[in-house]
Image (cartoon, rainbow, N blue to C red; front, top):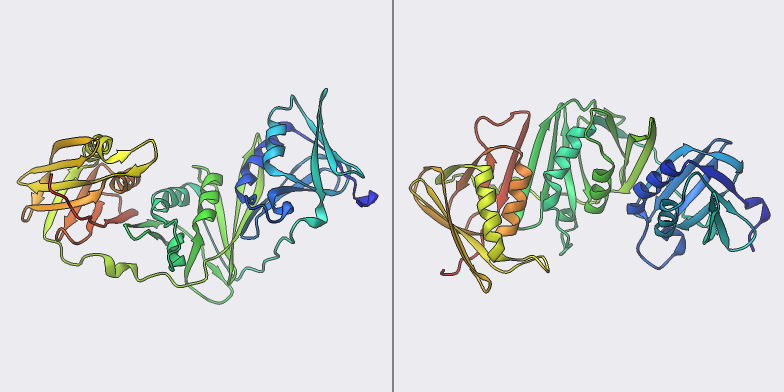
Length: 398
C-alpha cells in the first residue's frame, strides 16, 4: 500500500516540462527487468521547483525546473508514455498522485491517468566526489564528438574500449579517438581546458561509453557556453546550462566510464606512405554518393560491395560492381608517387568525408593492403586537426 504522506501535486509549464522529459528519455531503460528504470522520477524541491531524473543504472540525467508545488512528494512515471501525454496536453499541466496505483495528469478539461511507482522505488542516484575536472565550450566539444563518434564500435568483440570515445586532455589540447576496426578517427582541438586536479594530474585520459556520447551530443548546443567534465575513478559527470525558453537551467548527465586502457592506436597509422593524392572533398563525396547507389542496399542499410579507387596520372577512377549494377566515375586530383589501386567500403568512406569539415583533403597510400590516411591539406586549421584511417577491403575484378 502507498503511504498517504507520499501524495504529490505539482503544476508545470507545459513546454518546459515536455522539453525536460524529452531530454531525459535517452537515459530511460528499455529493459523490462525493473519498472522504475523505465520511468522518469519527478521529485519536488521546496515550494517552487521539481527535479526530473532518468537513470538506467549505467547513465543518468537530472534537471531541476520551475514548478508550483502544491503538495511535496516524488513519483516515477513511464517516460515514453508521460512524454506522449504531455505533448498533446493543451496548456499548463498538473500531476497528482493519490493512494491508488495511478497518477492523474490534467490540463484544462483534459485528464489522463497513468500507472506510477512511489519515488522511493527509483534507484539510488549516485553521489560523486570528483577528483579531476576541466571545462570547454559546448560548440567545440560537440564538433569533436560529432566528427569522431561515428567510428565508435557497436560490438564489444572482447574489446570493450572500442565501444567508447577515448579522450586525452592536456594543457590547451583535447584529443578524441574512436575506432571500430574498420576506421580510426582522431580529432585534436586547441582550446582552454583549465584542468583542476586534486591529485596533481596535468593530463587526463578516459573512455566514455558510446551510448553516453550519444546522449551528451544531443544535449550540447552550438554556443560558447561552457560544459564542465568532472571525473571520479569510475564515473564522469557532465554539467551544462541548457535553455528552457528564456531561462537557463543546469542539467547534469552522469555515466560510468569504461574501465580499461585504450589501444595503442598510433601504431596503426602507416609511417611511410608512397602515393599522395590531393582531392576536392565535395567532388569525392559526390562521386562516392553516386557509387553508393550500386554498393548499398538502402532499404536495409547494408553494404553489398566495395568501391575501388585507381589513382592513375592526375585522375582518380572510382568503380564498383554489385548485383544491383555497375558504376564508373572519374574526378581530377593532384598525385605524387606511383599509381595505386585499393578498395574500401563505400559507406564507411562517406561517413569519414562527412566528418572532415575541410574542402581539400590529402590521401596518403602505402599499398592495397594498408590503411589509407585521410587528413586536411596544408592550409587546414591548425587549431582543429584530424586524421582518419580507412581500412582497405579485398577487391574483386570488375
